[in-house]
Image 1: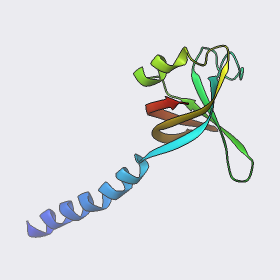
Image 2 (image 1 turned 180 degrees about the horizontal axis):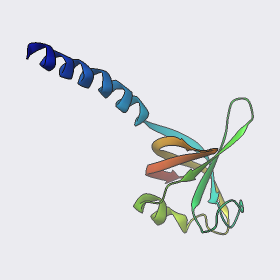
Image 3 (image 1 turned 180 degrees about the vertical axis):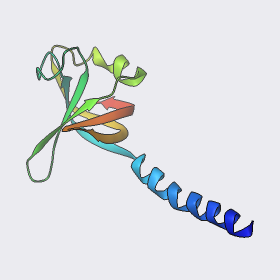
Length: 107
């Protein structure tokens, strides 16, 4: 029984850091726009954030639909907005970068 409990405790301890690292929030700053209207990369209106890296490469992050993203969308639909900072969790979905925003701030 002690071996079983030890195994469960060790398994749980090893899985927590992997989960925490995958769900860590990041803060990205760049140009916000509509992925449909401006970029022509979506079938319906949704937010996108283009971030320029230190190497000059532009990475486009599509924002997952949630209340934070929906509340912000009116500011970028049919136009762009520079200096937007998005905080949230980032994941890769196929060849797309997706950010689930917990906070969006514009200059």
